[in-house]
Image 1: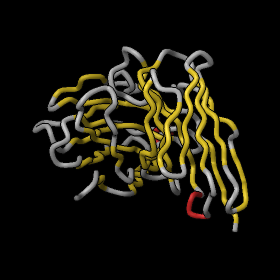
Image 2: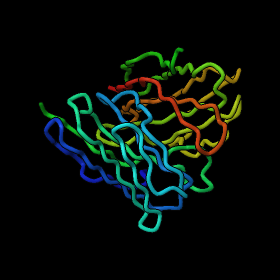
Image 3: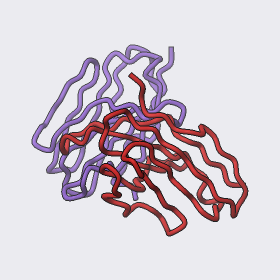
Length: 112
Length: 115
């Protein structure tokens, strides 16, 4: 079963703009991760944020985590056409071992 | 180095047939995971191996699904009496299992189509 929802389901922006995607989840977590998927195949790990962290950066990516609201956001700054992909948040649930529970995903399209 | 590989990349079969999907993890990775992704959805967990043993098989949908990892490296996901609803992309991932902040590295997936 899916852990939660991502919002928006689809997002279309112009190259150079920022893209923000949101993720909500349902249960207590150890960490939350963001993945990118091109063309419905292999997933690429982008960034991991622990439950005791509030914000993390990696290059053009910024992730925030609000455990009181059970939500996270992924910001991609200065987007490029190559950022076009589906983005998924995934949680490692407390007491759930190391398995990932994914959200429903956001389809991002960056237009030239 | 080599990443996670999965074979075949595509598999078309008929309803009722048996299929095997193979996963070669990154060398030295102790943990191996199988997920299934239906069209328009996020991946869903199936089973997780630590070494040779299945540490968590709670995601397997029914007893038609079985997975093995006999030598702690390559894993095979086996589906008996396939049904049209089994059509999906089956993803494999591996990790070093150093703790709860493990990064899982995914393979390209096997797209299974049951006619």
